[in-house]
Image 1: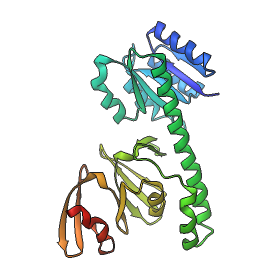
Image 2: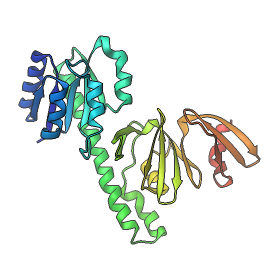
Image 3: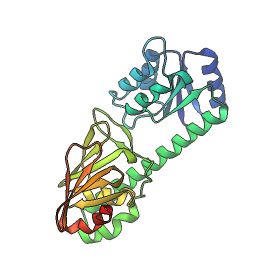
Image 4: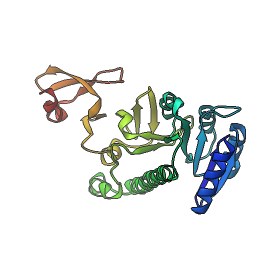
Length: 269
């Protein structure tokens, strides 16, 4: 049974949501301030949190920030409940790691659709994690060629609007594929660079990301570099078969090696 935590100081609204989710066979807990919400996250271990932004003690933003400091393993899905006048704050909420938001007043259908959508997204991401980990374990026992033939069948390719789970000690959470700018290879590790100057070092090889990410949006331009095509701002020709790529929201130019130059030439037109 999925567990849902409601953090909402409007008693009538919280009670209505509570009863609705109970009827749908969710295990539900409700609390009316942020401090109780944090305590409930630890004790109740919810799969999903519905949280108001304006709470009587600490804000929903602060609660989400504190949640990320907790060692909860895979973090719960986090959905903000916000009044229309607070919509300017949504960007801030999504930046610090919220999965979605629902604008008050909302219908029951809107609430349930948002919850179901997030549970489906989470299930897909977790399936990819399990599949990828299984393949990577096999990799240590097989030759590189045999692995390459088999690797793609074990990993479900993500869509551009899907999320990647980053198990980072300081900022664990789900990050949008479309916000990923560039990946740099460091032998058995790769460093991922996202918008908002977020970067993570993961024990994943470059071949993993080539199979995992949508191939129409990401290409390899160097033995050590994979880029998101949608962030290309400018291409500069260094020689007949060598180019330099300027990416939006990324401070350095990235060189395209001769081996991969044909892939990038079409973007010069």
